[in-house]
Amino acid sequence: MMRPLICSLALALALAHPAVAQERRVAVTFDDLPFQADEATLCDPARLMTITQDFVAMLKPLDTHGAAFVNAGKVCDAERYATLPRVLNVWLDGGLDLGNHTFSHINIHRTTAETYLADVDAGAPIVRNVLEARGKSLRWFRHPYLFTGETQDKHDAIAADLAQRDYTVAPVTIDNNDWMFADVYRKAETLGDTALMQRIGLAYVAHMTTVLDFFEPYSAEVAGGREPAQVLLLHANSLNQAYYPQVHALYLARGYRFVPLEEALSDPIYAHADTYVRAADGVDQVEFECGEIGHLPRALTGGTAFVTLQGADAMA
Image (cartoon, rainbow, N blue to C red; front, side):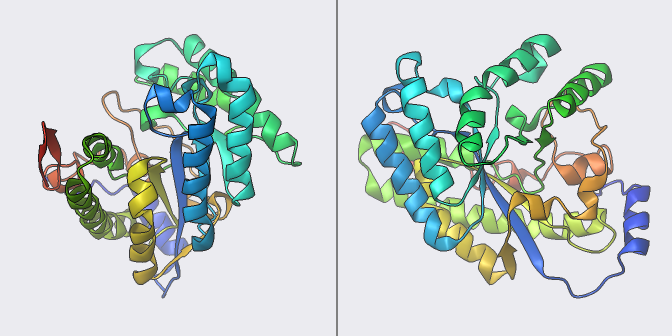
C-alpha cells in the first residue's frame, strides 16, 4: 500500500516551516559522465568530444545550473588522461559543477567497504585536477545506484570515510528510471529507426510528468506540508540530449526555478544525516527521512511506461 510511514521529522518541519506559498526549486544532476555510450565511442577522443559539446550546448541556453558526476574509468586507459580533462572542461565551461561517482560505477553491495573506497579514490584525481585548475574544489559525491551500504556498520563506515575525504553526498529526491528509456533509445538509434526514437522520447517525457505527479505531494507530506527543494537525477545520454529540453520546459511550467546543487541542499530537509539502510535498492532523500515507505508505484518503476525493443519493433 502506498501510504508512507511519516516520521517525527514531518511534524518538526511542519512546526518550523508553516505552510506558505513557496517557490519551487530543483537542482538537476547528470550521472555517468562522460556519457552513457558504447566503449568505442567513449574511447574515441573526437567522437566523445563532439557528443559532449553537443550535450552541453543543449544545456547552456536553458540555464540549468546543474551538477554532473563522473566515472573516470569509463574512458579507456589509453585515452583517459589526455581526453577526460578536456571533456570535463567542456562541462565546466557550460556552467555546470562536477562530482565524483566512483571510478568504475562500482556496486557497494557487492564488494567490501575497503574496495569501494579505493574505487572512490581512484575516481577522484582527474576530476579534482580540472576543478582545482579553476580555483574550485572536489566536494560532491554520489553513490552509484544510490546504494549506500547493505548493513548499518558498512553504511556508517563508508559515510564516515567519505566525510573524512570532505565529500558531501549528493542526494536524490526525484528518481525516474531515465536509464531504462535511454537504453532502448540507443538501440533504436543503432537501428536508425527515427520513428521509434520519437515514440520512446515522447513516452519518456510523459513518464516524467507521472514522476512529478507522485513525488511532489509525497515529498511535501514527508517534509511536513511544504515541498522541499528537489534534486533530480538524470544521466548524460542521447535520450536526454534530444528530450531534456522538454523535461526542462515541464519543470518550468510547474513553477520550478533551476538552482545549483549547493542552493538546493541548503533546504533544512538535507541537514538530517542519512542513517537509513536498505539492502535491496537505492534510496532517495525523502525515503530515508522516514524509514521504510514501501515500494514505489508501478508507474514510477517503468511498469506503465516501460519500453522494450525486440528486433525492429518496440512498445511504449
